[in-house]
Every structure is written in C-alpha cells, then in structure tokens.
Length: 251
Image (cartoon, rainbow, N blue to C red; front, side, top):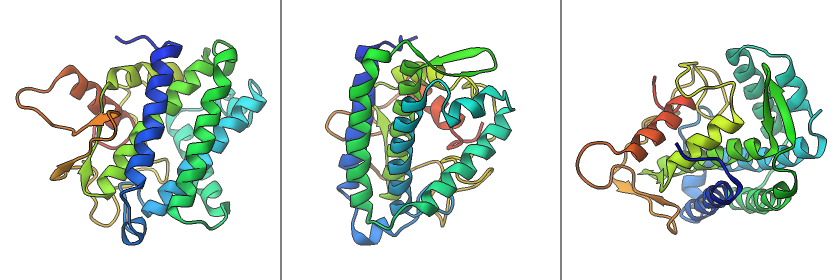
C-alpha cells in the first residue's frame, strides 16, 4: 500500500486541484446550469460547495485541535449520524454562500486550496481531531482533502459526459485511510455521494456510475477511466473502492 507521506501526498493534493480547474474550464453557461452526480446540485452548486469546503479546511486548521469539526468528531457518533450532520452543514453553507458564477467559485476554491497546502507542512504531524480513539493529524486531513478533490473531479467530469480516474489512486486510498478513519473503505455505510442528502441518487439522469463515451485527460493528473484493455488493474480497484466508499458506486 502507498504511504501517506508529505511528498507524494501533496503531489496528489495539487493534482486534484489542478484537474478541477482544467475540467471547470470546459464548462459553458449551459453546462454550469446542468445536473451533476450530486443529488439536487447543479454544476455551479458543486463549484460553490468546493469553495465552501476549501474555506472550511482553513477554519478547521486555524482552530485545531478544538475546531467545530473536532468537537463533532469527539462525540464518537455513528458513521451514519456523522454523514447526516455533515450533509446538513454542507447544505447550510451552500445556501449562505453569496451568489457567484461557476468560474468565480472555482477560482476562489483553487486559491483557497493552494493556500491551504502552503500551510500544512510545518504542522503535518500535529493532531487535527480525534474520532473513537484515533487521532487524525493535519497530514491526515490533507489526505481527506486530496481524496475529496479527486472525487469531485469525477463528479465534474460526469456532468460533462466524461469519466475521470486519477493517475495514482493508490495514494488517495492511503490519504482516505489517514484522514477519514470513521469511513473505512469496506464499511458498507450508506453515504450521500457529495454529502448532500442520504441515499440520494444521481440527479436528472446523470448516471451515478459516471459512464461516458469520452475520457478526460487533464494535464497528467488523471487518465480516462477504463483506458486500455484487459482485466481491471490495481489502480482501477483502488479508485472503485473510493467511489464506493464515497457513495458514488453501490457497495
């Protein structure tokens, strides 16, 4: 298994930010208003959510290890309860977000996400929060963020009728395990694909499986999912495990 260490970890993190920007550049006014794999969210709403989440990561780091996220996790609530609470938080933050276009949200997201990466190395091994006896470090939280960026890249690609798979999903598995211990990859817990509403299916005919005729290649950050012939590779298996754990594919 890949190790979640600062060098490859931050490379994977920045690759996720980059591919989101490259995918966002392919949207038109029409596709920004179109549906996504995230229930009830247009593509512009997904862009706003990314902006909110990047800002949240800064807040959690500012206040660690006693942030509002840390206080929530310290209650050791069930995985299902945590998913519901975080979904409500996501919805409330998006509703309170000032109106802006999809490109404006993405530009703000990218600036905040890159600034976050600039902050983490000096405090990589410090505690960020704790869940059920497990300490998640700041570096672990970077793992959660990196996985989230690549998974939302998959959502954006699906909204464009494309599929996306990162070039090295094994490192994202390590990041997920370091940053999201309350959702083991094999837990089989029903979570919403984007933290919107529990049990939500894909909206308005966008396939939750993300199947598409075209793949997306984004500056080397990813490869068209399913490219090449033959049996599924270890990379394919790692990526599908993340898609299942995040609610994007059925268990």
